[in-house]
Length: 367
Image (cartoon, rainbow, N blue to C red; front, side):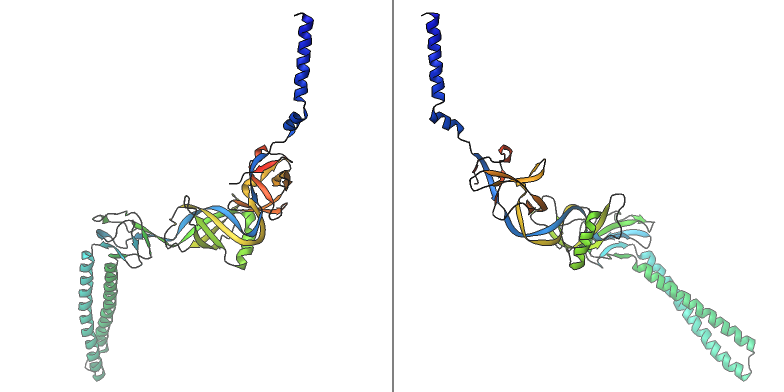
């Protein structure tokens, strides 16, 4: 075969291939757009709570450091560490024998002084009659009267000493001043307490309990406005226990803003009957200000961010998507309020957006 024949055959073969690739059926097949699988959700209209979220810290309603008022041996401990106690429960016993002995001594002094005072009082009455009769002089009468008055003051001092000794004896019994939960025992039984400032144990009142948290000062006016209208609900969510938040009420707004951080301290009170909240624990705080009725909401994962701001892909009736800008409101759980840009019932793409562009054809693949 000559070179001319080879070139001629190649040219004819190329024309045949080109003719085949440009046939009407093949062109239609390659021009047909491919539908992109996506997951969609419909915009809903419902009442949504307006909330502020923060990180909070749990604080005991009250904390008492239990100390002794008298020195001596710690002879008995009546509780176990971590135990719940009631107000008035006996916690400790200080060796009371020295205080009992001192009380008996003062009571004896009081009895002796009282007897002496009564005798002196009788002498004053007797010498008063003798003074009227002229049997004794005024000087003698004054001596007996002075002796009686001195003994009377001695008796008063003995009475005070006996009362104080009885009080000191009572301090040997150390009782809980509040309802609460006992902490770690700081001084063990058998130790001698020589310093009345020694902390024996700390009691935290956990029913009720406080949660404190900070908010930016920009939120202050809104919180105060809604708090003036009604009690504001506060939820405390323990990490890893999001399904069972504790419910409380906002009770305190600090009287000044922390100028170094630009935040304000708030405090909420919780009944905490189940003790789900524990002092010094960190929790997630949700403060509910009010409820927005009839808000249009969509799943938060539908929202995209572009150069022009936030937008969503809206699926139209012909299964093409429209890139539509939206104005966002507050977020609640996994949903976001759409202030402007969507109508209830419109479908937005919540999964598969990375492959989309304005006008893309889609295929809904919701499970």
